[in-house]
Amino acid sequence: MEGIGAGRGWCVGDGQTEPEPGVWDDSPFSVGRGFDIIVPLSTMEIVYTTSHGTGAGNENLEGDDILEAVRDAIEDL
Image (tube, rainbow, N blue to C red; front, top):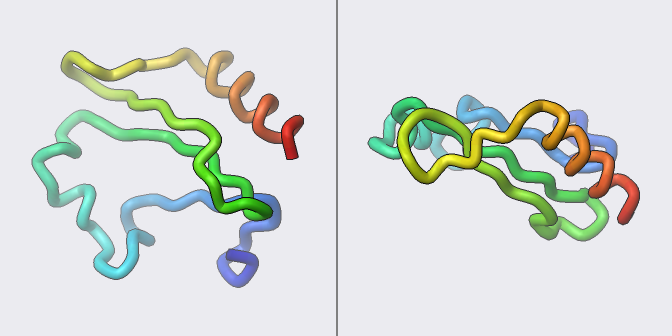
């Protein structure tokens, strides 16, 4: 992870999806949707997830809620 510029975790857009870039964008699940996850580099465990987008079943959190989750994850490191 450090090789791609991550100092305390990682952030991946669909263009960096491995082994095939674009997999998410090309799937039927991506239409108007996305997700956020927090994975600390030290443990490589998913400590937070949320979904956003149009349609039912998305959490669509406000920026303040996501910022709180990031702060909580950093606190726990």
